Length: 322
Ligand SMILES: C[S@@+](CC[C@H](N)C(=O)[O-])C[C@H]1O[C@@H](n2cnc3c(N)ncnc32)[C@H](O)[C@@H]1O
Figure 1 (cartoon, rainbow, N blue to C red):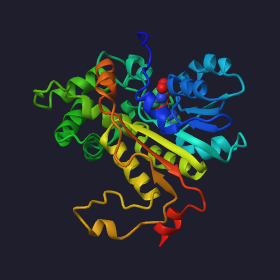
Figure 2: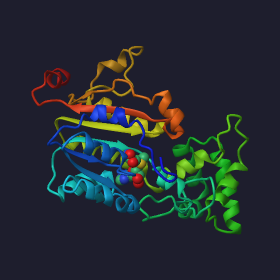
Figure 3: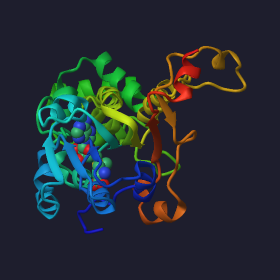
């Protein structure tokens, strides 16, 4: 990787699950550094619509779009609005969708974007550069709202204490930088013996809130499923448990299973939410191999899940509907 590049995570597994074909039409909902996009376009003579909400990612993709002129179409926007973005290009059916959730190394490593508690920069965290920033939330939410964000989206057990300290500090002066926020948060938390920075969970929570990332995942999954033709595949890589839980539940439901169904709990296997329209390609999430996590520690928490739309006359659809 270049000093400021993004190493695509689980790329070979993504390609294996998507299985790109000549003549097919795909959507990469999270273009980022174009790692997946370039590989998909190399793997088959297909067409790819690539979405990113970050204008910098779209601008960076221009060279790749030139290299694959007529086959790569870059769309600035949210994957949650994939239906409208594609419909504007007269695309109403897809053969595959990939989503690689979260932020890219380009975003994380640029302190001016305000995603990282390492280094210092403006407290921003907006992928699209629009809307309310992390500083807006930190300086305007009331104490209990702030605590709820930290607890629900960061699973931060010291959320109430951190919110109290933030609210006291902002009475003195608004909190406008990542270093100031990180310092306040670390001061509320006992040192973690495993070496995890005390600011990690709070920064994650604010990033998810600023970009409504969980809402986007829900809308993006539904839009992708609605667009997929029979045989079309949805491949999702998630990096933390809240996102992965949404993906797992959605895919289980699409495959006609109850999310979380367990053979240890027969009642969970009884009812089926809806007829199966998809089959699970990954009954269990795929994880990156050791070689990848050694080479790219950011891959460590990745989980890949994939489904495939069943043909209309597939027996599983009617069996599962019964
Ligand atoms: C992990 S990176 C993707 C990296 C890419 N797979 C690659 O190989 O280079 C995630 C990218 O998705 C974008 N993104 C995150 N959420 C988004 C959303 N809801 N809509 C559109 N783009 C989003 C981010 O701006 C970021 O550029």
